[in-house]
Image (cartoon, rainbow, N blue to C red):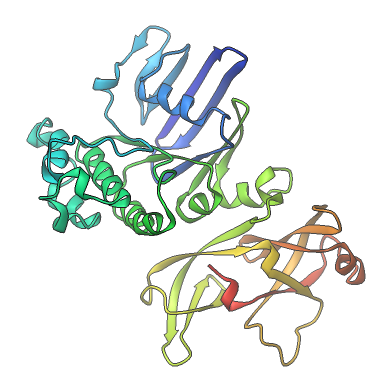
Length: 354
C-alpha cells in the first residue's frame, strides 16, 4: 500500500512541533487534537506553505528531503481552509473552473460534471459568493480544490465556522466523496463526531507530537488513549444494510455474524453503513434478559477494565472482530464481578445507535 510519510521539527517561541507519521495514501486520515496542538502547523508544512527541517513523500513522490524542496504550486494537492475564500468577482462556475482550466486536459483526473453532481452544485453555478450560505460556499471551495486534480486533499477544519445545519449539509457530501474517490484526504478536526463519522485512519496530536497513528476503531477504543475517556467516547462499526422493516421503521445491519437493529430507515440493502455506539449507551448483563425493550442483545467477552470518571468503569468488549466500549458504574461492575475473559451480554438500545 502506498503511503504518506512525513517528519518535521519546528520551534516557534515556546511551542515545539516534533511530529512524524506514516498514513495510507487512500481514504480519510483524521488529524485530531485540541486547539494549539499543532494540527494546522503540520498541515501547512505538508502543503509547503510553511517551511521547516523535515521530509515528506506522498505515494512515493518526494516533496521534501535534505536536498529536495518542491514548492507549493508544484505539489499536486488541494487545500480547503476553515473559511471558503472564494473569488468574490466570479460566479460559482468561475470559481470551480479556476483550477480546472489550468490543468492540461490529459492531466484531469476528476470530471467537472461529476464534482458538480457529488456536491450538489448545479443549482448554484450562476450565483456569486455573496449569494451563498456558509455551507454552500464551503461546498464550492471543496469542488474547486477537487477540480485541480490533486493527489492529496488537505482539509483544515472545513466545518469549524459552520452552524449545525450547514455541517449537516456538508457531511453527506464528504461521505460521498469518500465512497467514490480514491483520493487520499488529510482531515484536520477537533470535533470527535466528525472524525468518527468520516475517518478510516487516525493521527492523534498532542503538544506538537503524534501520540497515536493507526486505525480509527483502535484509536477510539484503546483505554490508554484519551478518546476512550471522553464523555462522548464511542465505537464505530462499518456494517452493511441487510433489510428494512417499513412498518416498524427499523433498519437491520450486519457485520459478519454481528447484527443490529437501528431506529429509522437508513440506506439500501447491501449498502455499507457506518454506525456509532456511545459507551454510555451500552449496559451489561450476565444472562440474556427476558421481556426487555432493548432490541440489540450482543454476546460479548470482557477484554479489559479501567477506572474512568468518579464512580465509573470503562470496559473494552470483544464482539466478533470489533471492540465495543461500555461505561457503567463501579457498583454495577462489582455486582456483576466483571473481569477479563468473562462472557456477558452487551445491551444497546436501537434508538441510541447513531
